[in-house]
Image (cartoon, rainbow, N blue to C red; front, side, top):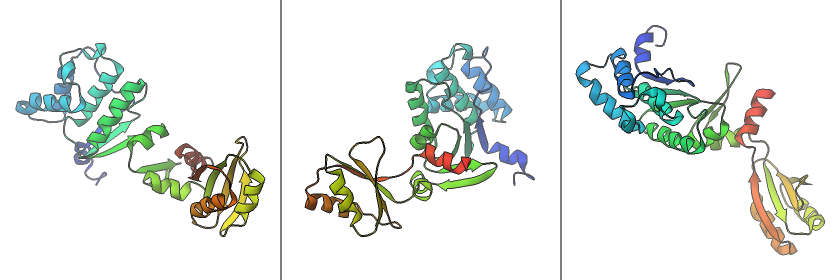
Length: 244
């Protein structure tokens, strides 16, 4: 229990804040050994554990280097290593890719995925692209309450708007409007503003009308360029849930 067993709970948690509290005058090895001692790891095991965790996060080649001379990417790896030094069951990472260049972001993202295979990793971030690239479960919190919870696919299905489809044609827009409106379970057909040749079809309930639309295009001699289900991206869903 987090209230009655607070110390024991904290032993099971590793935490990397957005700005990792690193000591710039220490080497990576010295810093990790220092954290390991604070975490209660037996002295005889500290150096072995430092080597293991440094290898896991890809920082083994900078163990002898002062933290103040490291790149931002290696500083993040060092911060991850300190969060993992006691082998916690739960890792909490706060904006772990903040300030990194694109190559470093990809490296840290892949590292987080690997870590998530044998422990729970909670990624706290407002970078929604990072969420879609890294996470297999999303929780959106608004004013202290859970506004959405599920896999990326489930979140989009529940909160991504109505059942709509985007159709793009080479020509014959007026004819297509009449053809699509006549299809069963089609509620509305409207042109998409700013996208010549594109239409949005709103269907009833959870009806998937793509097969009907494709057949209708073939029968009417319409050249179909694109046909896909439309869903809001995660950023739009976040705005819908938190600005309402």
